[in-house]
Length: 132
Image (spheres, rainbow, N blue to C red):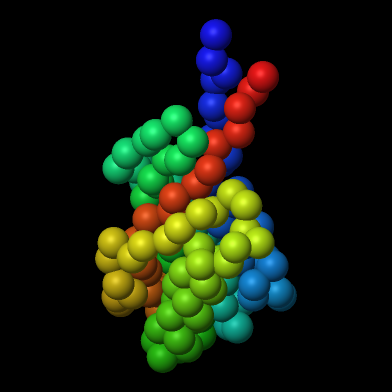
């Protein structure tokens, strides 16, 4: 009998990765913070996936970055994308095994706040863990 392979919550893995690589940056999953600091914050949202093998799964994740100015929000999302891509190349990173960019950073106005927002869509290749 083969073991069942369970994949990590991709949003939680991305929050972890960003916390390690961009310390001090507020990062949330699924729901943006009620109060967005002028210095910026990031929201990660799983939006699907494109394939799965026995050990690896490709997951699509949107990342949103808010900041006090449009140029700061653009710079923030570029930093986020660079940090995640770097994690995908790091041999010490055990859960996120690869990263691709499905949608480059772009301006994405937020209808619920007056803060400038940019977003990008990433493909994360995550490693599963056998249950047995």
